[in-house]
Length: 184
Image (cartoon, rainbow, N blue to C red; front, side, top):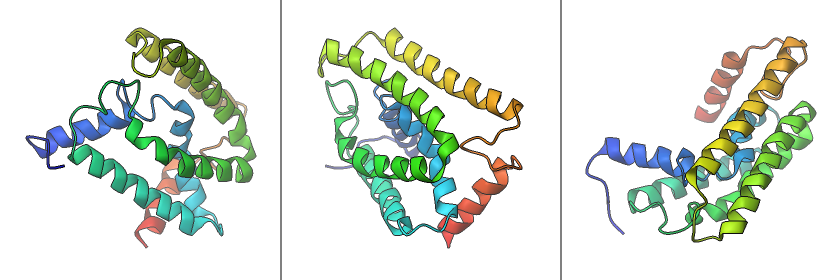
């Protein structure tokens, strides 16, 4: 393969689309949205699995960049980006660690997982090489993410901790600490 994009801007847009677009890896696996909050939380904790998490992050980022740089067809005629299927195993390892170490996150993960199962059933019905109507994808994604955010807003109003905040509610402080931990 070789560079397939006319500019860096087009390349970055393609990267975002591979992850979040209509064929996007995260959009077709809504439970993986939890990783956006799980990884900073897990990286701040003293875990014996932390080297595996760093390896997962590096491998996933490198895989995404290699495929994004060398392609421009969104993995061809298939429902989602099939190139990223091997990334599901380490992603679910991280989700499993989050499930184990952050019990309040379980309900949110179940919400997104259930909506992912609905989308999976629809995709199964249409088959792997024919995408279901796009309105189904965006409706299910919007409903799943909305239900997830409403659930967390309700928990915060109840003064309970959520899966992406600590008891003081300082999300930004925790995220910046995670970035410092990653940088070394």
